[in-house]
Image (cartoon, rainbow, N blue to C red; front, side, top):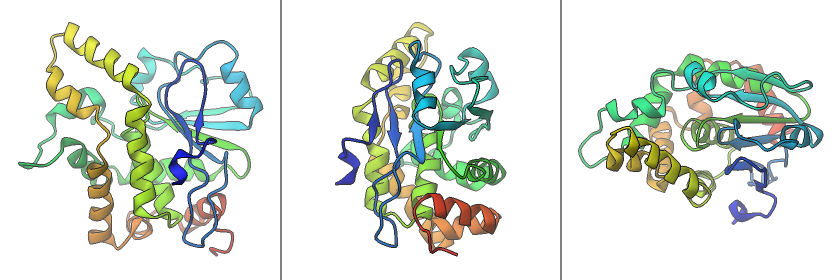
Length: 255
């Protein structure tokens, strides 16, 4: 299983969940190239020297998917760094982690699946803007991140891998991998919620990384749009953007 490839997780002091999308098998039977796309958690606590190391190793763009308030409260260590194009493009907008408890969940459903479906159905413009910006990079590494590197980051990672024709099972495995990497982060979030008088049990559910949530999102996209690519075409992501992304994902004969 390529999800456990030793090159997948990057050890970066001050972060828990920086991972490479490389190595997964595309629709053409070739691997997604390494170090083109990184998914990550919050980058406001990186140790001294780590931002420079990431840049030295090829990082040239960071797309921060958090809300403007989250960015203001916990500024990224990569914002304003010379040689790295940092941009804040919120994915969920009002659907930040703090607001997830407000999402209506069908009986028996997982709130994360409801949130992911809500995101793809209501945030088409944001998704298009994010993919357009990522596609501007022709060489070097693009990193996209949120707070835990799980929900907002997970949706964008799934769309990119889906665009490459990576199997559902690999996309789901990649998503679920977060759970084993962020127990300290989860503990910190729950402790903060507890001290603020929050509903810790409900919040703990939102901090899970259940395979069923990603499986449900992919099934939703298949049922309603035929595929991830069908969905991206439906919401108006330009063909040039899709083509550029497919090139970077290893589909060199895609156009």
